[in-house]
Image 1 (cartoon, chains in turn yellow, orange):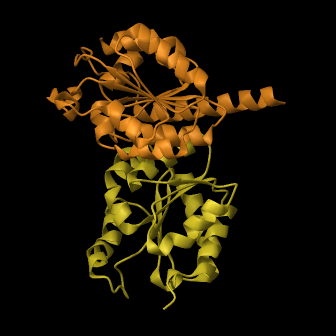
Image 2 (spheres, one colour; image 1 turned 45 degrees about the vertical axis):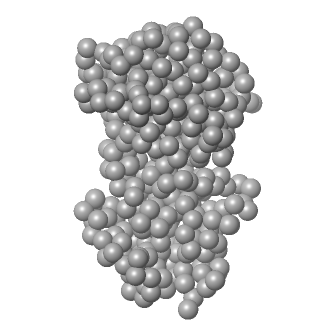
Image 3 (cartoon, chains in turn orange, brown; image 1 turned 90 degrees about the vertical axis):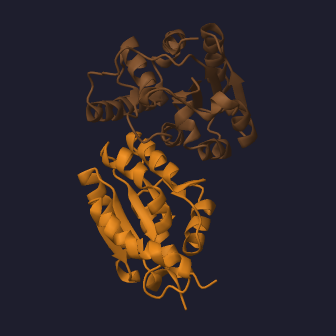
Amino acid sequence: MPVSVTNSRLIYDALKACDVKIMSALPETWLVHLIRMADEDPDMTLVRLAKEEEGIGISAGAHLAGVNSALLMQNHGFLASINAIVSLALLYKIPLLMLISYRGHFGEKDPWQTQGGMVTEPILRSMNIPIWHLNNASDIHRRLKDAQTLANASLHPVAVLLSRELMWED
Amino acid sequence: MLRIDALQAIYPELEERIVVTIMGAVAAELYTLGHRPNFFYLEHAMGLASSMGLGLALAMPQHKVIVIDGDGSLLMNLGTLSTMARYRPGNLLHIVFDNESLLSVGGFPTATSTGTDLAGIARASGVPSVMEANAPDSLARSVHEALASNTLTTIISKVEAIGPKTFHMDLPLLENRFQFKRSLEAMQKHTSALDL
């Protein structure tokens, strides 16, 4: 499977540097290594979700308890979580660090991913959620740290979009 | 059983705990019985009170977390039972008041009114301890037992579809949110002081 282990490791290490202790995830192809790394790390609590919106609740609980968390999901999982983001995270000013695999964008071969790819950014923008793209290995640490910093300072969700260039080695 | 009587019966067990409720009648009635800074009322996002409880329980393993859920909310997020059961934090107690109705929006019957069995779903999802308590004294006993057991427990309590006269709470939701977070910080400081 040509999912990049090297870049998954860089992302995982960056999350550790952000002192993330709880990671909620729903598996998808690009996220397999990240989820495995969380599972193998005795200092990380990995919560495997049935549906992505549960992760919004888990992160809200973790934040109120003073613990840093992150959500790992596909953009379709983000789309499935919109009410939870609006009615919990935005309503209650909860900082969410969302790592979203950006399927259905340039380079996508799976037809079923393409509609979600086209609406992801417009919907994030309409929700006033700041977006960082992770395209380059060189700025993963800086961008994730800055995303978390903004989330905590603004008490607002942020979206880090994981790109094909970073995650997939063709 | 009236939910307000049920809440009254378990109030002493709630007082010092981290409590998360759903919106509507449950929130208004608990608030009326006596608000505490360690009570959080999730005034929207139906279905996610139990997920919040799971996040709190995982983040604060030294403290008991009690979620007060309802049939309408739980039916919107049945997957939460399988996720809670998977990680089964022993410090999490999940109470579900089942009035077989979406009472706060006008009393539309939910699927529990036509036979859906939430206790059965919780058991089949793998929740290690599932109880049913349909009277205030048996509910109070079940809550006491569940908290002492250090086992993830879901308690299903049938209550009448009767709510409070008013849903008004003199507590803006952000005030509740910040107050609650401060209160959890104080609990953690207290616990770590005891550890020293």
